[in-house]
Structures are given as structure tokens and as C-alpha cells.
Length: 303
Image 1 (tube, helix red, strand yellow):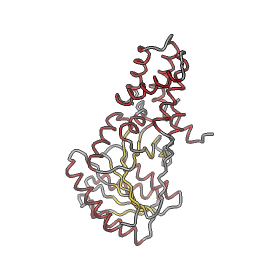
Image 2 (cartoon, rainbow, N blue to C red):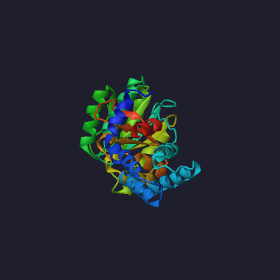
Image 3 (cartoon, rainbow, N blue to C red):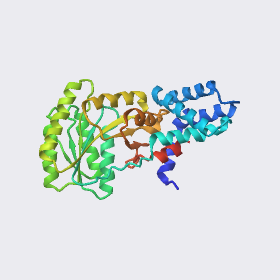
Image 4 (tube, one colour):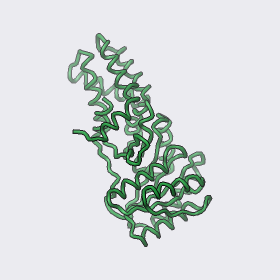
């Protein structure tokens, strides 16, 4: 039913499973009756799995409704209900980053250290593998390392790169990227942008300028803005996303480092609190370990 990636996902979610599903099983296995104390213990597990307070309360409310509806009296029958509630919350989303139409331009944003440049390299590799002509633009110009790192990835993925000097105007890099994409008949242009959140006004201006350039020079393209978040930061990732959402419209989230954390429950929180789809999840260092998010597979792997 599930492929090789599912096994990788299951393995990647081991820490989250230990922190969440296994604890739920332990509590339900020893519980004698379904009462407020049991619900409180379950709520505590959800919160410590970084599902967040609001989302945890929501899940418990929905769980109570389901248990009453099905007239369940045995604590051992709670787990399938909990799974159902989480499936309902995540929906049956099966994400894809393949362009609906070409040309497509992707703006990838995120604070430094979350795995933004690496994710761009992996997305480029993935799209090229699917037969698309891809071009990268190094518009995160405030960090020389970001430009160098993107160059390494462009070589690894065997795609072209447009870059300027460190400190250049990001909008100018995007402009050159668009001209090159048109001239070379590129299907997907991926721009590495904004890596700083501490000065929201600057960030807003920078993204505003970039979007103006896109609207003027590349209005025939499908545009998508993706935010890269690091799963190991748990609820901080949700807060980061909220801050980025104040300055730009987000079409999706790339969640990295899911294999290195017990906080994988943050995916549930992102969906509930932000209602922005998680499009890609990273569960390893390999070039093909960034995969499209499938809600059903995620819940199966978690349980």
C-alpha cells in the first residue's frame, strides 16, 4: 500500500512517535475508565509533542465528541478515535510542487539556519528529475555563504544559477533571473530570498520590491511563495510563520529536519493554526529526502 518513502517517514518519525503515540498507548493501556483525568493526561501528551496548546484543546474537544457519539466506554478504543480526529484535522491533502502551468516562479523565504538553501537545491533536483527545466536565482544577497551554498547545490542538481555580488539588491537578482528564464525558456525559476525576520519593515520592502518586479516582468508566470521552517524548533516554527504571514502571502510550507526531532506534531499545529499547507517535508540528508507531504501517510506513520 505504501512505498519506500513511507518506511523512511516511519523511521524519521521515530522520535515523535516515542514522544506521542507510544505515550498515548501507555496511558490508555493502564486507564480503567474514561474520565476528566484521562483527558487531561492525553492533553498533556499532545502539548509536549509540540502540537501546541490551542490545537491540543481542539483535538481533545473533538475526541470527546467522537467518544460520546460512538458511546465508547473502554479506554483501549480511544486510540483509533484520536487517529480519526487528526486525519480529519489534516484533511486528505496530497501535495505536489509540480507546476500547474509553466513558467512558474517560486520565492523561497525563511530565516537563516532552517535549511532554506538546501531545500531549494533539493526542490531543483526533484523538478529536474521530473523533466522540468529549472533555473536558480541567488537573491538572499545578505549572506555570502547563501550565494556560495546555492552555487554548490546548482552544480549538484545540474541546473543554472543567476547571482550577483554579496549585498546586491535582491530585486535586481530576481529581475536578471526572470530575463534569463525567458531567454532560456525555463519552466521553473526558484529564487532564494529573504533570510532575515528581525527587521520586518526591511523584509516587507524587500519582498514588496521583488513582487513588483515579478508582476511587471513575469506576469505570465504562476507564482508561489514557500516558507521553510525547521521542525526541531517546534512551536517557534509556528510563531515564525505567523510573523512572515504579516509581511507576505504564503502558498505553502517546507518543513525540514523532521527526522531529527520529537516535535513532529508541529505539522498538526501548522495546519490548525495557520491553515497554510505543508507542501514538502524533509526526513534526511539525502538529495531525495525532501518529499511531497501526504497527510494520510503521515498519520499512518505516526500511529
